[in-house]
Length: 320
Image (cartoon, rainbow, N blue to C red; front, side):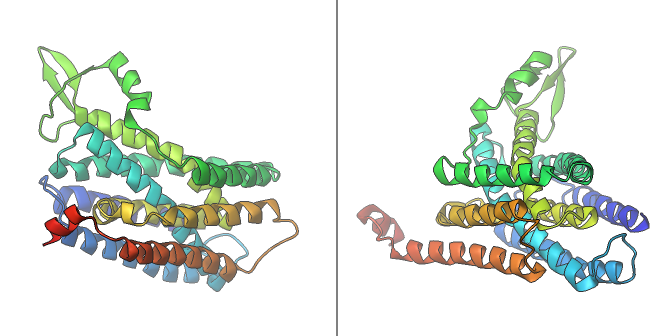
């Protein structure tokens, strides 16, 4: 329990440091800055595997896993969550474009959006762990759901258009919504009335969209491990790095068009693994290897195909 408390306090400290010190003043996040923050979060996430190793070797966390097995499961879970967040990044880019969110305020929306995501995912992880503990057969439901998610991603994609999100209508039932941005404010008072700004509407759409994506990612990580501490920490670190990763990948995500097939393969693998968990128990390193190879293949094929695209005369003219 002490390790849980220390971890949550540490995350709260990072969040306070982020908003209160490093991003106190709204500004446009440069690619260089985003790369730096992404590298920092990835480094922290990987270094945390050392804590995981000693926590399970010294029984700081209840469970029968050895330190090395716990590390492999933690890294596998982190990689799954990070890879599935790629679709999330694409949808966030659509939301920002739809609401025309000024670039200097996008980090603020992502900060509070991620904070809400941490709370909701924590609740969903706790509920999922309790269900699996109480009803072991629920693992089969998760497996079928992941196979369906893989099929849906392969055939119709994961496109979520902001205008179709019922959150917008829900907000308008309780608040008047202004048509202009009021700097980085979510609410303003006009003629004595509390009025929501488009920034708040964009935040709520980002929040509810993330909840929808969590219905894919949470069952997926339970397919890797049902250990609550590993599920929670790997998920949280993946979400914490999502903000900076967005600013790195949002403008180039369309170039990785074959990455979708990697995500389909990962969801399919984890779904099958859950359905066959009574008769097939692959080594921990196998899950990590399959996830890594799937992602690497999707990225490599995307980059190779992108080089093979012949530029149009207009593109050549602008390139000159």
